[in-house]
Image (cartoon, rainbow, N blue to C red; front, side):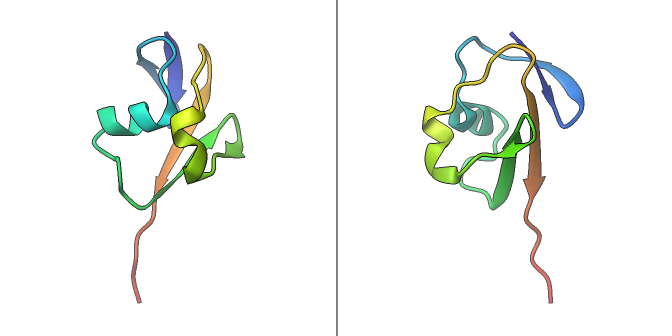
Length: 66
């Protein structure tokens, strides 16, 4: 199925979860925020959040500094 990840089309497996997407991208366990169709997805629900065709996903990495 086709989703949009950070503005780019990406073909992914049907019924993919947000957690599975992050694993495929090598981002599992990283400090980041995930937005699905302009709504922040709580980290605790990544495994239960299923992506659908046409979804818009934004991933933002947290960068520390001081």
